[in-house]
Length: 155
Image 1: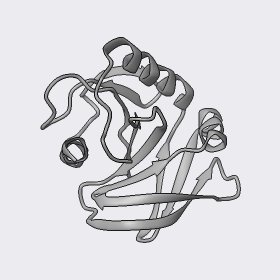
Image 2 (image 1 turned 90 degrees about the vertical axis):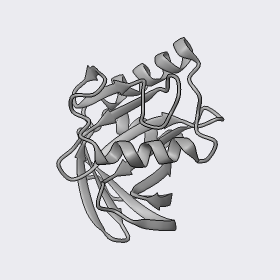
Image 3 (image 1 turned 30 degrees about the vertical axis):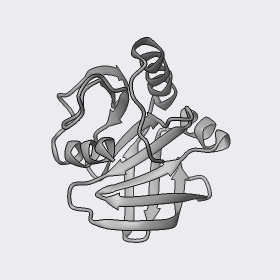
């Protein structure tokens, strides 16, 4: 839960200057508020929504959409439209200002090829740039292997 609180707190702060540039809009963050020690997160800060990509305890990729003005909870089926493709359904967990989406292999592979994604959430539609998603995912895995960063206890 501490890491979720850290993501919630980090979503309020501008991320454009934080972390090291990876590729496209993605930056690698190794520190988050409220978390002691290193973490591995790649973030694309957007005008409509910030996207974070992490690995959970099982090593599965989790995409986190965040905005400081969101306040939601529970589970929901959402839609993801990548580069205008037909929407793909996914299950999401909503916690405060975060929407956590466990990635399937098929969705992960499609995101690696995409330029933009539109999230259809129960409370609105939000677009984000995802160019260079594959490079961001590779940087995340390399960071995780390098520092053995803690992974969230949930998701």
